[in-house]
Image 1 (cartoon, rainbow, N blue to C red):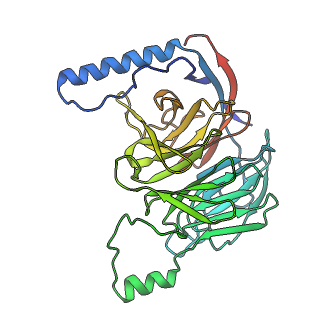
Image 2: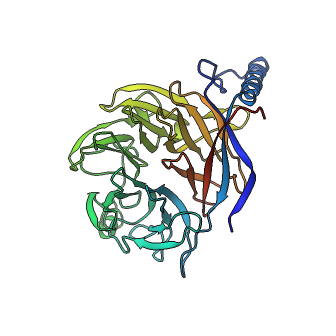
Image 3: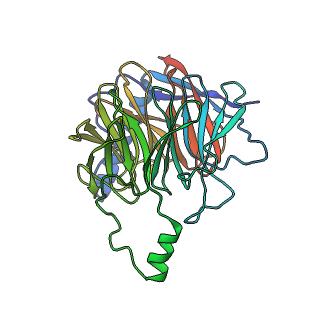
Length: 376
């Protein structure tokens, strides 16, 4: 049985372009704090008066024979409604050289029965971060621990591997035997290798982009055939800089969106890497947001940008044109419709959202019910 929260989750829609963002920058005086609080209340009142997109929440009953689901770091749905979960679990542990990454496939609604484990004992499955399904239904994993991106055909056969896992013996020899030290915490990065990559997305022509990552601070563009084309980004907080690029998505009209986790924002770029704008995940009434996973709404214009906010435990909703936050889904907790360390999300062609929680050890599905004009 599904655990279902009957009250629909709501978020604002369609009418908010041109209004001021909910957050405000700077100012520590009582007057400034009062002004920010008044602005926040004004914004919330406006949100409550607007039409809503309605969802119904479900905690999916995912079961794996003789095994545990573990930390659900990455989630994605294919065109047939099958769910893929890249879990930070495994019998080998998560230490360097170990394996804490297993990719599971579950069948379609309503049962979501376990189908199989993909890529068992795969060389590059080390410390899970993201799974994505491309338009041809190929399944890709992005592994933070191995520094690899791996593509499989819809039947599970291996297609390509990008990057290279640091070998355990090399680590021991360099840092224990020879006493070497890491001198650059945030290197610029080289073409051909990743440094703890986090996510992947595709341009309309088949080129793809990888957010890279916890070590490097950049987004990498790679041709469909695997040729590395360019990289954008260095460590920092300015335009074209990142403090952990954590999620990435490309719209139908060719705009690249990268969530900049520790800078609490999303940055938008052209397909050639030109900076366009930024939008912050920051609400004074709830504290500072943290931008984890990212997805686009399924309407033809892809009007909304969904951000997994792992600090406030909610899905932040941004208007894609302005990159202003205009609503949210959820909050902290263990019930359906609530989150415990929300990490990843994906949007299927019907507009439904699936989410993974790295500490909640579960997957939720938010079933799109349509647009409501009734005020809350």
